[in-house]
Image (cartoon, rainbow, N blue to C red):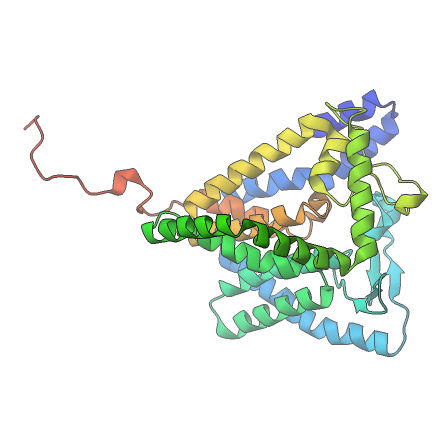
Length: 361
């Protein structure tokens, strides 16, 4: 993908300085998505350390959240300061702004971001940490992690977080029970009944989806325009893309074209080549973890985290947040390193169909 970015920059006339800056940026985002699974596979990392660390951060958030709301009640400015690291790396000020709180665009409410650059990122981390906390063995830390992660989700006011968590639970439960005949029969009956009432179900789904979008109407409209413009501009350089995000016009509020959607952003910045290079390992990982999750508890957690990241990819540029949810990709590597015990999915573990002696005897 790094080579694809350089080819896209070269084809679009960018100089060597821009290529160098984009390479450094690639090392801090896209490359991490490949490095951490390899580290998890090669290094003797214990998942319990990751789970406990998430619980500690969630517990710290329980302390920080009242302080942030106190700053709002005292009418302190929401912005605290801009980290000087931004002048060194220069990959966008939004990643280095430190806030007490941020204000809603469509209402007078506030949302917290804590250690993340924006609200939806905090909601995603809260969802991932929630599943980590469920694996913690010490009761005190477990409940601190659960309550803290839920508090992160709630105070982020992220619509995605409210939907991603229950959807992930349902999907993983279905995957783990897919081999049972009772579930298959129930699924078949549900599909049959759903087909009969498909019109009503579609109407209800559209109403629900519309209500979710209208909850933050200006944000939904801006995202839609960004996706439309990025997809239209992708056709100008379909194979290797434009190499980087570019500033948007006034009607996009100067938001970068290629942002707010990982997959459309990939098409715009890296073309079909970059899209396929990322799509293939993501799908392969989802299939592999789904297979291992039936008997491997680490794969079970890693699958949940990967599904959450996949959900978030449709509303954010997940590569820019790799420094926040790196533990999810580390767990993927650990899950592939662990050898699963034989189970009903392993054909080699099934008992023989008969106990007759073989012909060789």
